Length: 278
Image (cartoon, rainbow, N blue to C red; front, side, top):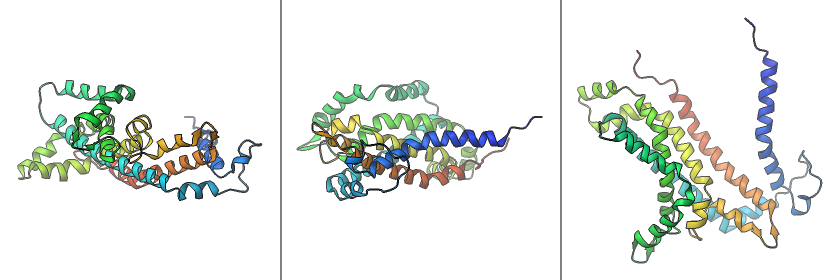
């Protein structure tokens, strides 16, 4: 049997990694260059970094508030969607309901629709319907967390449904026979087995909320404005501050890498966690 040459595999994956990571490296290079050097002959190898852009971005109180808003909204939405998606999928997987497959498909259709379709209804809901006195959901963190549930919750349900279906119902029945309550079955039997799927869902919903631009640009003004929408403030009629925009983009990458690093161990740990052997 002919064996594959490991040299070819190493060269191939090294080339793929280079093509994937080079745009990120080039983004960092742009962020550490002064404005006068951005349109000169490009230097691929970084020799004399300029950290003024990072000092300017980090020292900007407004941009720091945008970053805090992004962290709060993304984290809150990811936790809410993952939790609700888990319980919704548990109900779809364990209980017999009339038309549950149609209900599941209808939920997914909300994810299929383009976000621009929901702009006007969401704006009216946040300004007219869900209003108590002078309080409006428009331009609030809680409002954006709920808005992102429109798209991220169907995705969470679609992602977690196969995970719940893959857990044998015999485990639930055995726990009930031993006297366990429904809550104990969910928290001590089903939840540990769902950790890989929950981790993937948490990561993806967090990233979707963190990177979202259209809804945040339309439904926020100042109080709940996110970091991604802050990029547009540096595109003006007098010019574009490419160095500052590249620096903000680098800042948007760091939290995503940290979140993935924290959750990655749960994905790896749960891959070999079995339940019933056939």
